[in-house]
Length: 332
Image 1: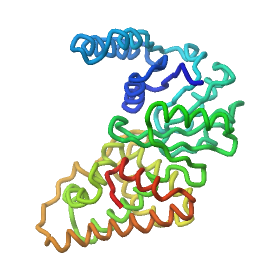
Image 2: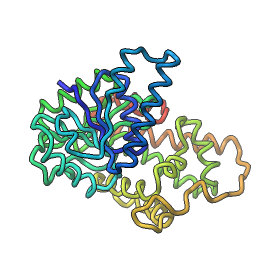
Image 3: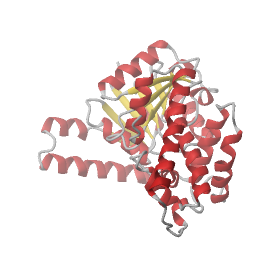
């Protein structure tokens, strides 16, 4: 049974996972590499729950439970965890080193989960002993509004690990789509097909990125297709798309958007460069008929790949539709 959970990573996603899990009765410990940042996280969280108690948002019982949550900059403090969720930078080398260190520290039954959105579990388990205890657990940001998790098993992940994770997700009220490494990251990969079509249409109609997003939001309601790439960071998006392209037999279709992203991020390893929304384009008036053509073509791509992925990857069509709705507000 999972009782004590470690969160490794204190960025936007790690913070979101920690804050979401704090609503449930687990013992939480939050790891960050920086000792100064550890104090900031610790003090900020305690101020937050004190305000919640003062305004009657949480009971004294819940306050006492949450007050015991710990932050640390020492990996060894995670040694007694039943589950550790990694949410560090999307670089396989950094994640792999972290898992190697944890593998030497934690108890044999501990499950190591990666929140990666594009790196397969097997790529992170090469140098660890407990390959059977490593799994992909891809949450979507922000957790409070995206009720979907991709559970990704490698060929080494055992049934006990998988069943414990599924019970955990039921306990924290998360809808999940179970995947293996052949159909991993299916929601992001399906969204990417829509983004590739969007990139082609934008060039075809000579539109600016924001203007195109304003049209596309009639179909993908939760975010702009190019706005999302800016938000994630072009270097991270480039690396993720490279990973997705390796999972696809048709690699050529990814080249235009990969080349564009690479040209916009000249500083390798940094989420910098010229973002889509940074460059202003003249807003041109386009007929409603043209808007509807764009939406129809985006929807056509989504429908086609929804059917293909459901059949080829043997994923329940209802689950895939629900996942897309939760992820991007895409109704099919």
